[in-house]
Length: 299
Figure 1 (cartoon, helix red, strand yellow):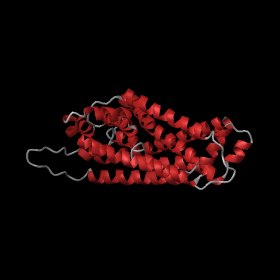
Figure 2 (cartoon, rainbow, N blue to C red):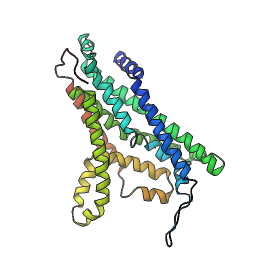
Figure 3 (cartoon, rainbow, N blue to C red):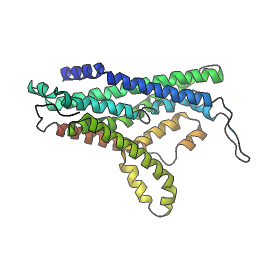
């Protein structure tokens, strides 16, 4: 098992896509954060009878408010890059024809899948750490610009909550990574896996946004059970619950209430995501039990 993990780690770290995707992800994050920092110095217009918080963007880009966005970046915006890497990492074994010689030498198929999954999840952890560090550095710069100092008292007060936020963000990415891995092994194609998992994420995010807008109207019509069912079953809904908990933990109370709504059930979300993760891992294990052609397949 150790040799398989070492071999998979060698493969993923030597692939340019792994680091190119991370570089693009960090560039997108830095661009968006710098734009918010610039907007934080712009005075917001206020309308009669409606008081606008003058420090709206300042609270979002400075510490500790920026922690939530830094930690949540990977499971929200950054999930696309991570899924491309995970799908390519698993699917190219069939396109290159490298899996047949490996299994012919007596490697266990179960251990092969577990090694793939473990390395893919370690890559997800590295992505999470990298995006969080970049977000905190930019937040420290914004804090220095706005307040003339970098507040560090939150480290003593909220360090446990910070570690829990990292865990929640990581757990929100795990099912998606395993889904990309499973689809690539089921269809033996990295391109098909990328397309399917990215299409699902896009449709899910757009659909969830529309449903949240329609939620008050539908609940008043007596179909509240529909949202209860979606809250329990949808992968993205439960992942969003963990991200919303991070938002509530670090944003000021007023902004947190505006950014999140409804009751949040962390344990339910964690269990549902665990069930999805187990199902995807099981699907990957079953998929590799099938006969594998000796000729390389299309990517």
